[in-house]
Image 1 (cartoon, rainbow, N blue to C red):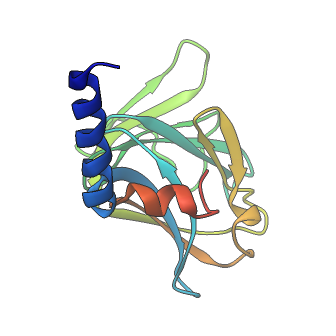
Image 2 (cartoon, rainbow, N blue to C red):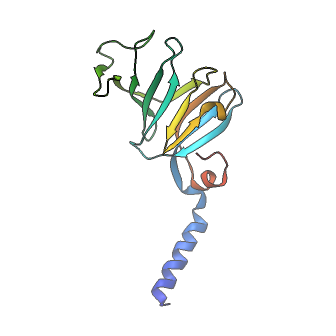
Image 3 (tube, rainbow, N blue to C red):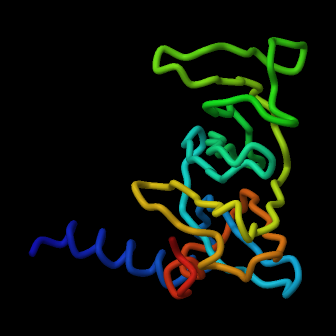
Length: 167
């Protein structure tokens, strides 16, 4: 091995030893607000989307909320549902645009930024996260009735890989 390669390897190895706690990544954190503890974490990239689905409490029909990760907040992009119900939008307003999609589903586009989203795990709602090709039931993360907070955070890379709460 030539001297240049050895020098590069030593430099990279030294940097890893000196900076291990300073390497940060962007993650979606899901925290149990009752227990004040982290229950799940998923590495995200700015602009990456995921879906929160649930059964509407009144009309008992599925709703799919698309969310987008940004560096320091979440954005509610749109909601898709197949029938009207209490609290569901019926027309375009200043808050968002309503349309009927080509597949017949109703779509409400809002692009609303929020610092965090809190979801109370439902007994009947069957909340699920659809994230990176996986489906995660919120009831697998916490008991029904538990408030779970979703927020974007920067954490140390080594904290992320050493813990068991990765999604």
